[in-house]
Amino acid sequence: MKKISGLIGGMILSLLSSTIINAQSTWDPKKNPTVDSITAPYEAKLVPARPALTTLDIYPVIGTYESATNADAPSVTITLDEQTKGVVWVEGLPQGKLKAYLRKSPATYKIPAQKDAEGKDIPEGTLIFDKDANTLSINIGKPYNMEDPSSVFLMPTTTDETAVAEETTTKTKTKTASGKTIKSKTKEPVIKPWVYTGTKVEKTTVMSTPSTTNQ
Image: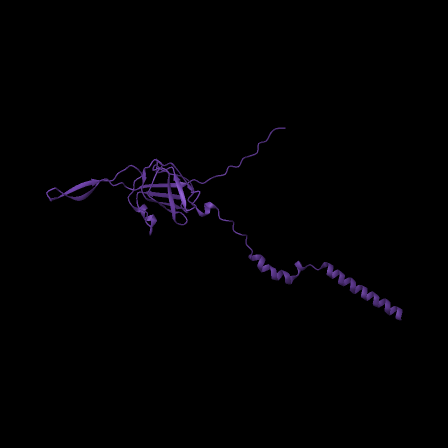
């Protein structure tokens, strides 16, 4: 009887050991309902990281523009200054190459009074790029308005750089040698602001097709 009891006990222990080993070898924590229920909400909320901003994202004004209304400026190019990122250079205008300073992000610039490469005076102005409309607007000759920069484009303008408005009359007083005051009138020309409107040219990438040769 003792031998039979020993054999039966050994068989039971063997079966229990085998069951435990099999259970340990097949258990996978990833398939555990508790683990899944904990990690699922976090996995659903994971979103890909945003790509880093490019120079064009920060300064959308840079690029090339074409105008359907300014025959004297068919192609205008705007580039960043190499030293100061808040400064851009505008090329292609009849006034010559000029610089503009960023005043309101992302693309509202003040054109300071300056001289071109030949020493010609360029009056103060305003440059604004509307990213939604993809349109560049430039006004040269009207002082920059700090409170409402876009208001300068509501004023009467001309697309002719050399156009001169009607002359204005200025009253002056001069004294003669005898002490008498003589009133006189002089006329001075008033130059109207010059305006530019252009559309940004989108760059397109041309993919080359590999050539095939007959064998």
